[in-house]
Image (tube, rainbow, N blue to C red):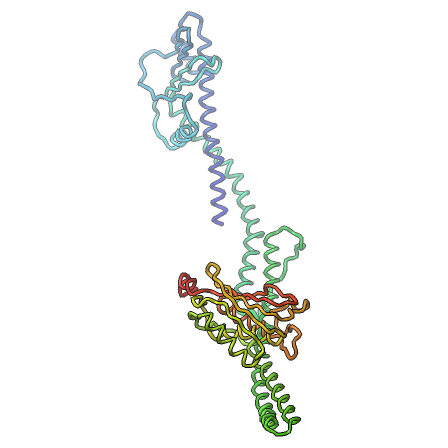
Length: 453
């Protein structure tokens, strides 16, 4: 409403002020033309009688006229007696701004002083015509014209403003209210609030409000589906936790039996015990990985982590289970990352174990600073990743084809790295080996970002 009124007033002023300037110029031009005619009506070489002079001046609507032309004597038409000194108005030097100021002054001024107007002769451009008139007559004329123009302008502006207000209300305000009400209701209870109804406009319409409503409805449907999926995942995670707890109790006797078989003197029974122990261990690891992936990755406390020491520690740990794997560390002692040591340790351990289980015999780990990051490169000489798994490599339950793999190792590794504010990506994979790269934050970067970073 207030916007419509402001627009009406602004448009009215834009039309009113130029109209008043044109009306003032038109009134002055009419007096100048009439004065020119009065001067031309004078007899050659003679002076009219007093009655004739007064009649010419009255018809011209001025008090006196003077025409000055180069090379010719001045022609004057003035009343008998002396006049007070008038105020000068030179139309030859008047600017748009000064004309606007004079017009506004005429609309607000009271008084009736004399005004001498100087302008080029309308019939003889080289001549200068000077007229004296009463400024009050000009002011009165402009005030009457202002009332007429304002009345005409309002007769057009009011219906236009009403139409604009109704159009804004129908096309913008009401749809925007529906949008905000739908957003507020969905925010209060997203699981039970129905998505916003899509507009009846065709999908290819260019109506921005209809497009916004359609996109909001689509977003709300996707959010509801995501919330339902998350709720079901949460329930599944709780169920998995209970199953894991029960499964540990079920597998415990099997593990005890496997240990007894492993201690038997019969080689065949020992092999059976080893097989049972490995099976129980894989089942336990699969359940643990599934629970880790289903649960939320918290934001652990971060600290300065010396990369060389961490990588050497992880390499020694992995080699206890894969003694044939050679781990080569090429990291400067001064390089460090900012993150949770346990999470980074687990992420690197997953990468090294995956390489060893895929058939790699040598893994080389290097690091180099890159601006505000440190890039950690893990290269192995394994057979490479199959083409079918590269597109969804970091997706859960996508395995590289190794025996007994759960498909959660790289997915968990990605979540662990991202929880540190970093990123992991596959650089290349060929039959000669695979290269992963981790981009980690440095302590210097975190210091500049501050505690909120």
